Image (tube, rainbow over all chains, first blue to last red; front, side):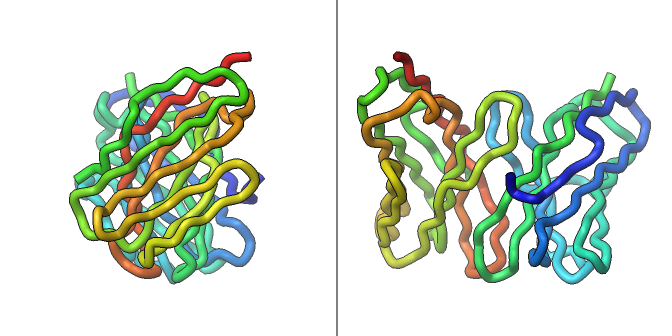
Length: 112
Length: 111
């Protein structure tokens, strides 16, 4: 158990809809990173949040956005959902500077 | 670019040893190893930092050759619980880890 929690566990949406995924970081951690993992692939970095600001972004369009709150929890928002957005979305919590990231259980998003 | 892992898949009998390799075309600061079981989140195994160190715990160890930008994960006397997909994640900056993961190595341990 890493202490990183995510909600919801599963989600089914239709094309064009919007979705919000949530992540609570491990106690003592100040950084949250979000990853998208398609079936059979490794996780792909979406963005990272530190002190409530985006601290780096991967190759994802602006319709992927996020927030970090004062308690270091975080949200991932995806607008105008596309079929290819179907994936496991993982958040990873860390203490900036230590390098080690601990993953939450993920949210399985299915876009129909 | 994504690091390249080899082999893509391997099947071993309990008690045998395995080596999983991770190679990058970029200059790396760190290599992170994770194991993921089907339907679960990746579980952190270890991190290796620039400096060519070798780390390990129990029967799982790893090395990092920064000159070659390669890392290897060694699993000795494998146990059934070692089954899963192993991913290496690479980082290029200190303390600001935005990991780039390889495509994974599926390890199956049979009795």
